[in-house]
Image (cartoon, rainbow, N blue to C red; front, side, top):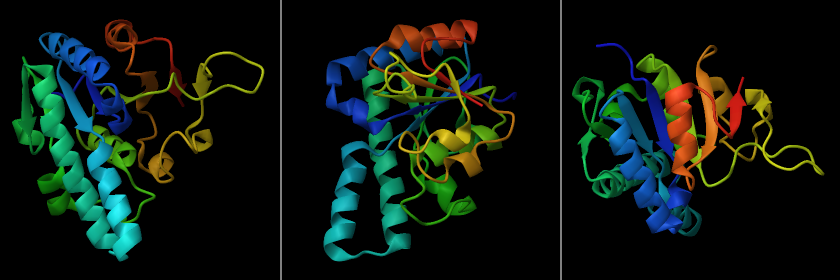
Length: 210
């Protein structure tokens, strides 16, 4: 099977607006009827709890790493439920056309263990790794911002920015994980029409990562 048309990392912060998140996931479910799509969930409130526990209990890098990945599994079930027509998958062999695939990544990552065990690695880097392994046509980081903010005094996000300048928008390991020629965008998930436009035309209001 060819690689996905897009790997879509859905940021956990979008869960703060449940109605908007539901609209986003329903829109993706419609798009998945015509395209091979794989959603990589963020950690959301579940990962925030892990961070708090790590600060309070000094869990250490490796336990916190796997607990945060399990948090992504939990958010995967939330996203699949909101989409209505979606399947939670646990590895590359389960990804299918004709439905929205939502990855619960813990089993796959436990087998491969491809990334450092540190808070410098979040679901952004995991999404980039998944997109690379599956040879996806595009990685989209779906966040609650319009993209990488342009210089002060300018309105809207930068149209294009290099991966090395994304600190504060993605995790610190992302630039090293994103494949060299991977088409990558940052798009605001609170406006599903922008993401739909990107999937249909290859361009949208947001930031292209070079």
